[in-house]
Length: 383
Image 1 (cartoon, one colour):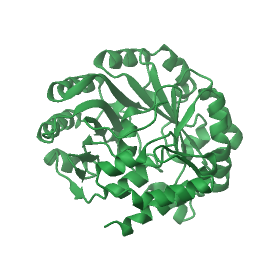
Image 2 (tube, helix red, strand yellow; image 1 turned 90 degrees about the horizontal axis):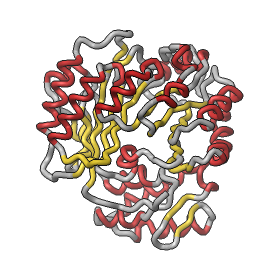
Image 3 (cartoon, helix red, strand yellow; image 1 turned 60 degrees about the vertical axis):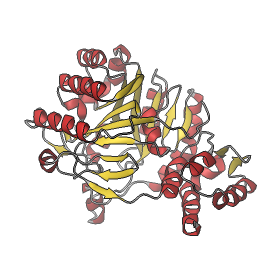
Image 4 (tube, one colour; image 1 turned 180 degrees about the horizontal axis):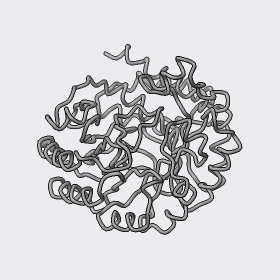
């Protein structure tokens, strides 16, 4: 994979669909469980999307090379609605010919006819939220579970005309044995998937799961087990041809172009209730309420930005080689504030640093959060 460098002129669009069958207990994204049917608000919601896209289009005329439709469960909405919206986006923005268009799906929405339609409508990448194929783990997470669809995920994906496919798996779930996790991982890693996101279960403030752990209704994530998995995971996936390119992400040949925007401090326009943006130099967080969003699409809370912190907390999650000084210089951040840190890390065998290219070594991975915070602490010394 190519070295990561700072570049200008490209942006992305994120569209947040808030509805799902049932809200997962660990999820801290804004979403509303509404059962199996479609939402009566869908037409109004898609109209609001178009209104917000028009009013927040901006003046820089960036080329859009990634569109990510997330949620919630966006595959729950009628596919034609997404097709109409994608056509609208292409009419309003300078969308590149090779634009990556990702749709998040849950296994229960996978179907040959639906995938063929989505492909014709312009979706060219799928991100399937599997987490686990074990019913006990899914029940613990509070996820809806369609046994037939879960057991046939790979068979359906192999027939799909959309060949750029990613799945999410989760480890450290108290009701999931290590043996069952590794069985799932081997099953998916041995397939034709070209991307996998493999996450540790975490406690997120304000979630149902967090409250239940606090009140001793449910056990906390298995942290010792998570550490054991993290030590072994890269070598297992490397044997299957995957490259570990970000803390929780592995790719055979196609990294997530859109998610790279988050990690490289690139501009993206976030649309919909609960969506976040970094657009035209501003961070904006939309209200976590569908009704509030429908009343005022585009309204949100502006957050302060520290380019130095943003670069530290995003860019240094990457395990690919990258040129950090280009990112710091783009925001007139003096490079001498980070050079001594890089040199100290290199002397300890934690990274490769030759004055231009930086890359973490495996020895740094288990203490990566601490190292990133060490770098971020240099902000207080900035002029």
